Amino acid sequence: MSTDALKLTRQLLAIETTNPPGREDAAIDLLEAILRHAGFSLERHRFDDGRSNLVARISGRQPGPALAFTGHLDTVPLGDTAWTRNPLGELGQDGRIYGRGSSDMKGGVAAFVTAAVQAAREGDIATDLVLVLTAGEERGCEGVAAMRRDGVRLPEIGAWVVAEPTANRLSLGHKGALFLKLEFAGRTAHSAMPQLGDNAVYRAAHAVLDIRDLDLPHEEHKVLGRANRNVGLIQGGHAVNAVPDRAELTMDIRSVPGMRHDALIDAIRAITGDRTTISVLYDLPPVWTDEADTFVARCRAALWVHGQDDLAPIGMPFFTDAAILAEMAPAPVVIMGPGEPAQAHRTDEWCSVAEIERSAAIYRTLISS
Image (cartoon, rainbow, N blue to C red; front, side, top):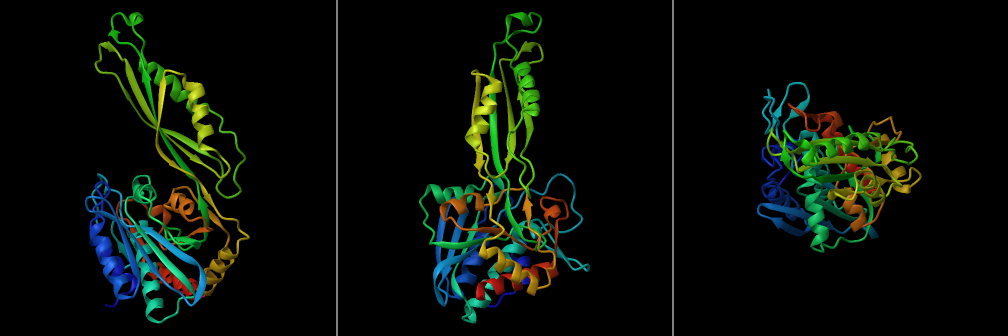
């Protein structure tokens, strides 16, 4: 069973894994067969119908903590805009592979699986190697959250490589994500006599403006910048001629290292009052690795060898599975993958074929050194 990064990318793109509902098992089946044939030991974690995570392990020449790669197999929906390319994979004449998940992030998964398989066949794995292939990242890291919930144990990890799209630049982390739902209670009445009611929509509207103006006290991160917030959805009421007795909104706070999410919730509660119910939808902490870490130096060396001359660290605004995996098995995290960050979730999403192949070479260097 042979594989190369482009071939495997095309195979993964041809498997539809839109989340919801996910149905990542078909992609996991493919990778499981490839990795078993290459000599990896495998642990499959099923957490829902048609949905699994896969942990693959193989020993290296030297004892010690493992080098771990991780990537997710689910994708976001196609959206309402018509695609001009085949969303299940189309190789263009422009050096790009098109398809949903090409950048985010089936190209990255194909690159590190290919590198791992080649290194295993050649007996060229320096330290123990772990691959964590996940489902459900796009909706709050539900796959790895299920791993943590169900007690899946990971070996000692020395470093994490997350193959999310960075155009093969070195990212040292990402912002956290705190998604909240706020529910406002009121009292209904006829709209001709609004003074007899308590308008929950007005209460929600005031809260939106207070949230917009809320100071998020924390120093600006040197790479990730400042924390930000957004109210994305609001709804309420039951009839145009009735005072609404309920309303709700959902909001998204993107935090930076050093911010406490429980303190953010307390700040929201303080401005919305006791009659507001706050529910946590997602709670994913920020991730950041010190630029002086020795693994960062290893990554820079591998990037330099393979033609990447811009080695200044960057940070990503989106969250990744590392928010949970780095808590399950603490270790330095880098985010480094072939996809174009701006292509994630876009119509006619694409990834450079040359960057997929370069990622595989970069990963291969890390695995063998």
